Length: 177
Image (cartoon, rainbow, N blue to C red; front, side, top):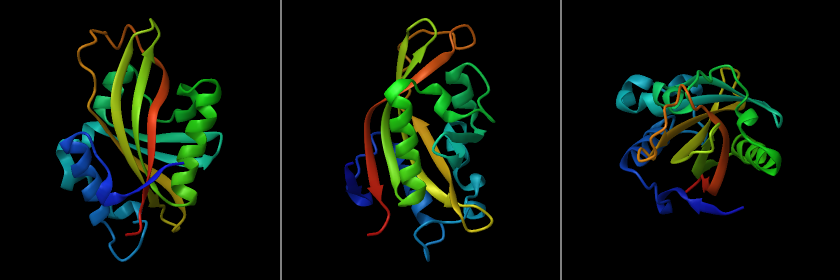
C-alpha cells in the first residue's frame, strides 16, 4: 500500500482539495474527527458529491448518505445499499480492504475510479475520503467526496445504470503530520 503525506497529495480537482482541507479542519485536537463535527452547511456546494458510509464489517459497507450527483451518476438511489456490491471479483476484496484500512489504521484515501454501466460504458471520477468517529467514539464511518466526473460519455443514467466500480489507482493518506 502506498501512503502519502496529506500535504503531498495531488487532489486532481480544486473541489476535492477543498473537501480534504475542510475535513482536516475538523476537531483539530484529534486525529479522527467526530461525525457530528462534520457540518454540511460549511461545504454546501460540495454536498451533491458527498457520501457517508458505515463500515460494519469487511463484507458490509453501507451507504448512509449519497449526494444527488452520486445518485445521478449511478442512475439509482444507493443509500442503504452495500457499497461492496458494486465491486466484482478481486476488486471487491481490494475495495473492502481499502475501506477497512481507512477506519482501522486510520488513514485517508484518494482513488481514481471507473464506473462501468450495464451497457459497458465507462465513466471516470476521483474520490477522496476520510474516517469519522460515530457517536460512541468508534471509528466506523467514512466520508467521501467524488468529483471530476467524465461528462464526455453520453449515457442516460436512468436507462444505463452503473453496474460495477473499479479503482485505477488508490493512494492512502497519512493523517498525522
